[in-house]
Image (cartoon, rainbow, N blue to C red; front, top):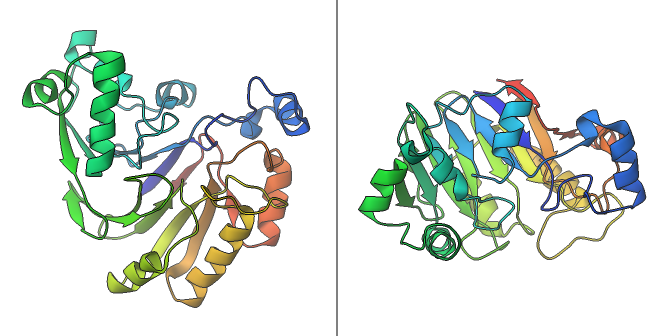
Length: 283
């Protein structure tokens, strides 16, 4: 399994372009890994997590091709994670050659939200119809929490999260390695931990929301550094981590998180890692 982080920031990027706070000032001066686009991930060459607004810019910046993407797991419909114009831009109507059919997986709620967005702001016609699927070379699939499904070589288990109606977290297995992608989540309910045991999951990589920083109180919509530390310890205690497993933080906001070098130092003291845009990991 090969992982590529296409973006690692929270909703308003890092640095926030309109912000003059000290963190944003430092990030602009440092550049490099302190510059973050909005969160998305590519697994191998064919599985995308979130059709986010910055994936085209990130793919070009890091010289990553998306031409073989056949599957997309959509966590939810918030604008920093879903830009439906990409479905149009990858279609034959935009002169794109050789686009494979995209199997797009999301909760029923997220699909209906996407349909409303598409009707209102893009095409003024329904998204979830056979005609639109044909024109866009996409197939839409509604998935449910705790109901595994197959996408090509992957077995995927959606997990519930209270971040937003219909939002999902995903466990992804390729037959050898297992990843848990848990951005945009609130405090985990026991159902998540019970699901790990029910499906006998052990992870090689766990990717956690880190919207709120080391000195911030937990929010009601996202995880914090303290959550990441607590969950990393519990995952280890419950035997959910394989030897050498990576715990990585993503979805990093500028308000409470310092630029990359300082955040890396903090994370290393607490047993986890900080992802950055363009980071690639081969398992």
